[in-house]
Amino acid sequence: MRLPAIALATVFVSTPCLLAADPPLAWIEFSRQAEEKYEDVPYLWLGDQAIYLTIDVPPADGHVLDLLWGSKHDQRGAEIVVNDKRQRLEAGGYNGFQWQRAKPPAGVTGEKYELLLQAAQPKAAFIAAVRLSEADAPLDQPLPDAPAHRIEIAQPPPHALDLWMQCLPTKTSTTGSGPRFTADRPTKHCGDAASTSTAGWPMPIPGRA
Image (cartoon, rainbow, N blue to C red; front, side):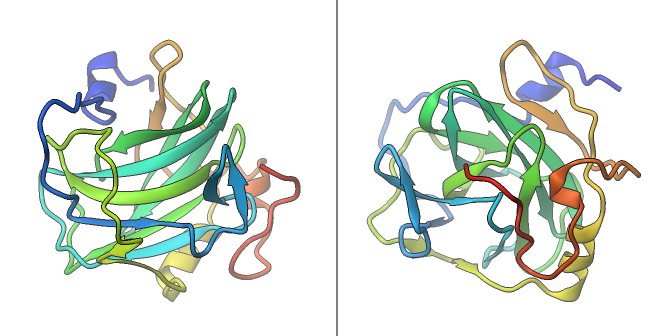
């Protein structure tokens, strides 16, 4: 079912940077883990591996996830699983990296965030950084100097691995050339590269970013 445009606006938000803002609640940039760069920016490609992060912040209303999202004049996709609740993101159409903001799925609870990023159609996303922010924080504020704060890369627990092996949602909604969003909606479709291997963690996907 196509989501109305107003619903998309509540998920992806562009906030102008007018005043100095407080630092994000948590962040990580992948310069220490990345083996590749694009436009001189280190990144992790979801076509090489899924990324599992633990964010040592209790879930709360008003939090948003910001992803420093790469594009090579194309559209890139990712499925994001937040504490067992999933959504699908698609963005791009520019060259280099831009912050994309996503509101976590409704009903996320627990002592911390457990975040799983994995490849989705049309092409696997490549990501340079992730941060947790307040919803009113400027989208384009720079990251602090420290490479990470309250976010760690970790091996997934069994329940996250089970989710990762499931098929990806396939229906999306869109407004023009803007980012697309699919809510928590498992399907039986298994036709894309990101859902065809169960050989272990991380799941390789052929090709380069």
